Every structure is written in structure tokens, then in C-alpha cells.
Image (cartoon, rainbow, N blue to C red):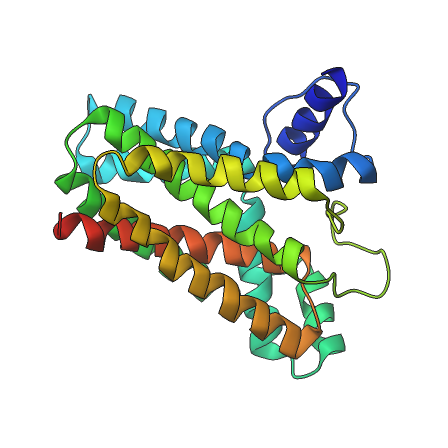
Length: 260
């Protein structure tokens, strides 16, 4: 149990800025095992984002409250995944070979492609969340929706690790190390924590299970695209998939809710 708690805190330290016990580090073995808790971290980030939304809504309009929820999510993760999306768009937008793409993604500077991608990302999230929340009135259901879109997005991203291979030939990384191996426990844990929130929503309507279909498409086409150009994935690729999956999940919930 102590070892499992240590693995959980490794995941919490790796994927968020939430303070953890001082004895937790980025040991490669624990980072690999921490993938089992990646979608569970989505529960935490989603819960914090919902709390920011709900508290803000007591004073401000829905629009402002949605902005506060997005800010809370970014502050909790330290823009970990958004940074990955910007780097991927810069890398694949400006590079035409594997080596060039990887070099651009490793550069800490953000280019025009990355900035534009982030602008559209947050605009899409804001508008989709605002419209979705006008359709849903129950605070409990809204909370589960927040948790679901974060956990499902992380589950989609971690699937890349399970189904592909790490792209870089060396062990260098722009920031932190990355999970590159996994076992049955990691797969089972990721799917359990990733799918449990949507299973809860299915008690409202079984139609909501259809949100998994576009996420499967995101996984399949992103994996295929990354393998075509860089023969695998990097940490930035996982961050990009996570952010795209968040948008796709919110949009899917919005579309499905209109037909319920």
C-alpha cells in the first residue's frame, strides 16, 4: 500500500503543480507505473476546475465562471499539456523530417503556429463549455461532466503509450522524464479511472457512451500521424492529444445533450 501511495504521488507531482511529500521524486520506475493514475489525476483537475466554476458562478456570470474554471485547470497542471500542444503544432508545422520536427518541439520557445493553436484551443473550450453548461442545470451532473472530460482526455492520451513507442533515440528531454513502458496493471488502472466517470453519466442516458467514438478516432488518427512522421510519440505528443481530446469530449457532450 505504501508503494502504491508513492506511485500515486509520483503521478500527482509529474502531472500537476500540487504540492507532494518531499520524499517523492521522478524515479523512472515510478513514472512508468504512474500511468495507471493519469486519468485519476483528471478527476482532481476536473474537480478543481468545477470548484472554480461553481464558486465563481455565485458572484459572476456563466461566461466569467467558465474562464475561471479554465484558469484553474491551467494553474493546477502548470499548462503541462497546453505546452505540449503548442510544441507539437510548431514542430509538425515547421519541420519536414523527423529530426527537424523533434528539434523544434524540444525548443522552449513558442512559435506563431503554437500561439495560434492555443488561441483557438481556449476559444473552442470556452464557447463549448459555456453552451453545454446552459443545457445542464444540476451542479452534481456538471461536476461529473468536468471530471469526465478531463479523465477521458487523459485516458485517450495514455492509450498512445500503450499502443506505440517512444520516438526519441536518446534519453534527453526538454523538462521531465516520460513514461515509456507499462504493464497490465497500468492498462487496467488507466481504463478504470478513465471510464468510471462516463459510466456514472450513462445512468442519466446511455446515449452518452457515444462520446467514446470520436475519442477513438482521435487516438487512431493521432497515433497514425505521429508514427508516420516521427515513428512514435514524445511527451509533447501526449500533451497535444490530451488537449485535443478535451475539446472533442466537450463538443461531443454538447452534441449528445441536444438530442437527449
